Image (tube, rainbow, N blue to C red; front, side, top):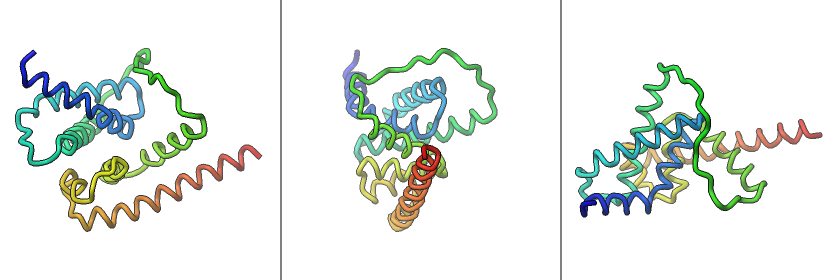
Length: 171
């Protein structure tokens, strides 16, 4: 392996969660998630030579992964899929059930947002600054701030309504 390949693999491994999170937010089907993840890795490698270090690597990686996810979704709307046996990595630690349910509610609620709003909230949840989010999404810093206020309110309402409806079913 060349020096550039080793550096690429090291940086990807340090930030691999980015690709997984983007894939989980933009794609529901496990097989499609595997496909989009592979496409993200390909696009990251293909574009790695153009990474010039003006932004953090993670910021650049988010931009590539988000653009790949959006392109993948546009292409997949016109394609038929044949279900395959699910093949995926399992984590070795299991979060407690209640925490996992909350995370699932959050992902479902995020899944209902527009593509741009999904990207914004995903980047926000990764503790990126408004400037970094604006740079990745191409929006102004002020627009990011306004959208985040609206997104948070929308997600809070969706999650609250989901939990309330679940409580009514269990009564």
